[in-house]
Length: 280
Image 1 (cartoon, rainbow, N blue to C red):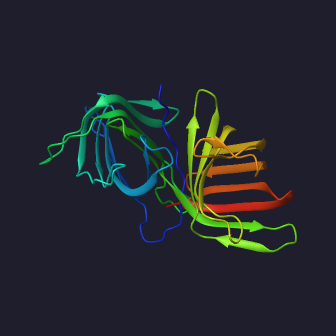
Image 2 (image 1 turned 180 degrees about the vertical axis):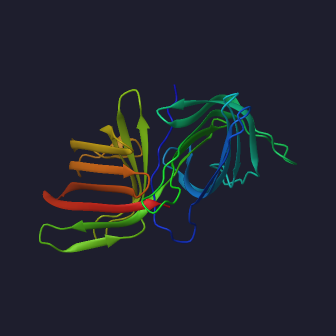
């Protein structure tokens, strides 16, 4: 069974995420609604592994607590071939409350699309949201989503971006503001995968897409804590033994962002990498 994805990438640059929430507490038909604007999202090709782009998604989410059905609209979605989709409307999808997360999962569903002939098939549709508030009272929900479309496109998010600093053995530092991070969770095995896009940890290193997989995690309140002693990164699904990773620790706090640290061995020397990111 396909698992919902988690993504983290941050820092308010040009596209910022805006969250609003409203409630209608009618006893006969209690409904909650949220709108989430411009979440940077990963677009992966299922036909060509490793081919990745990004799009900004905006969501309108309405949950009916009496019928346990949800209405979800999505704007800004594009496919792996670059084609742009108009507003997509999904009506009457069943949802469940799982540990205070409102989780909508569906298989083989098609949206309603105004004035559009080639309506996509969503082999998997997954959205999960948890109402949370930051220390200053701002609405900062936990939110993730995962879609497989027409057997060709995998879209998931959100993405986190911020500052990544590498400290060399001699103390020199290298700073990168462009690397993006996305985290996916496998709930059945309690492990996570950190997807890294545009990784460049030392001066002159080409920007690479890589993944750190099978990282155990625990849930500590509203935080997800990841840690592992050693792992081998993968590039395009293939292991890359030249750069072993050790002492990895990461924390996802939905109200503050995604923090990551690890040591990477390069030419036999330890380089310390620390990333401080926010939802992008």
